[in-house]
Structures are given as structure tokens and as C-alpha cells.
Amino acid sequence: MANQSTVSHISPLASIFISTSAMAKSPVRAAGVPHPYWPRDLSIPGYVANDRSMHEILSFLFSVSGLFMLSSWVLTGREWARDGQGQGFGVARRLAICWFAVCGFIHGVIEGWFSLYYDIIPSDQSFLSQLWKEYSRGDSRYVIADNFTVCMETVTAWFWGPFSLWTVFAFLANKPYRFVLQLIVSLGQLYGAVLYFYTEHRDGYSHSQMGHPLYFWFYFVFMNVLWIIIPLVLILDAWRHMQQAQTHTDLAQKEKMN
Image (cartoon, rainbow, N blue to C red; front, side):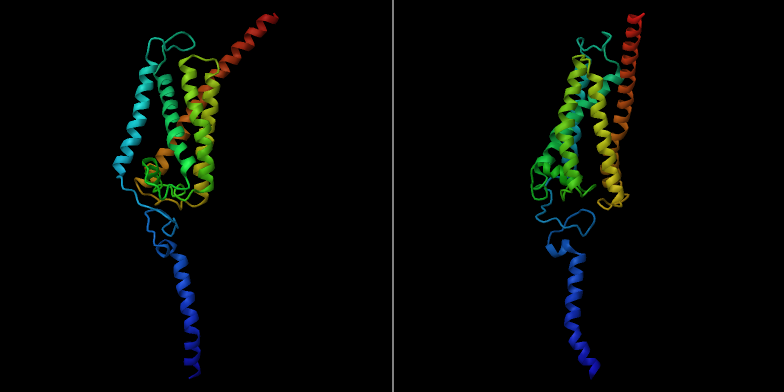
């Protein structure tokens, strides 16, 4: 009898504790807002699923990026487009200019949108908001407006976006500071990308479906590792040109002194 009384007395408290624990482990279901992001218990108040397909979103991204690249390629092939030696741009230089043109679009427009509207993206159905909700399947930090992503993308949008377009102009106009701009922008991109990967590494890659061929390997890894590999190449290229320029200046100064 004593045991039964104790059980009946404790059972209501135990049931409340068990119920509360279950809700804490499943805040998405408790909030009534199912979503496709990781971790699965992530709480995203007000989330509204995309009504545009992945194919529509990716087609827009790559077609507009391709248009910027094609336009830049045509522009750098014009007769008036000449390098510092009065010669036409080589293939590598033309591709580098195309890269900065595409960066101007991605940083300024797409990442610029995130920097302005990150707080309403989960519930917003504008096309660029849906693009970010789709990309967030590879990194859910964007759909919850993680502090690092907001700060990093804001700097990228408002500094490296305009600076990328300035770099395009500097090369087309053969400005003497063109390689300085290339070095500055590439260093900024590299630093941001390294922090992007490193912060997620410290979180145990918990914001994506680890190993998924599309969301992890393509969205998270491939689409971001480009901002490590290409800036590294461009940093070395700028280093080489600036070193040559300084060597030439030093020799000229030595000849004057002699």
C-alpha cells in the first residue's frame, strides 16, 4: 500500500518532467514549424517553406553569374582593352577579371540581400530570400541569422562587392593600383572563407547533413572552397607583379644614385 501511494504521488510529477524533457528535445515539433534544416531540432519561428523549386533557384544563380562572366570576357577582348605593356589581356588575366565581375554580383546583390534582410528571410518569399533558404540546407546558420554569418556577409557585401567591381574597372582602365586592389580583395575573401569553414568545423559540422552530395559537398564545400583556391592564386599573382614593380623601382633608384 505504501509503495502504491508513493507511486501515485510521484507519477504526476514524473509525467510533467518527462513531457517537458520531450518538448525540449523536439522544439521544432513543439513549435509546430517543421523544416528541412540541420540539426533537426533547430527552432525557426515563422519559417515558411519555399514555393520555388531548387532548379529554378540554381538556374537563376548560375545563369546570371554566367551572364556576368560572358559579358566580362567579351569586354576584356575588345581592341581598347590593353595591359600595362600595351598588349591585349591574356586568357588568365581575362578569367581573373571575369572572376571579380562575378564576385561583384554575388557579394553585392546576393550577399547584400542577406545583410539587409537576414532577420525576415525564414518567413519571406521574395526570390532572393528563397535562394538563401535553399542554400541554408547546406548551412542552416543563414536561416537562423547566426551572428558570425551576419557579420561576415555584411562585411563581404559592403566592402568586397564594390571593391570587386572597382578591381574590374582598374584592370580595364589600366590603373597603376590594380594589383593592390586584387591583393586587398583576395585577402579579404580568403580570410572570410577560412573563418567560415573553421567556425563550422568547431561546431562539428552540425548545420548541414554531413556527407550529403548536394547540400554538404556542393552547397557547403564546393561553393565556398572556390573563395579559398581562387583568391590564393590571385594573391600570389598580385605578389609577383608588385614584387616586380618594386624591383624595377629599386633598380631605377640605384641607377640614379650612381
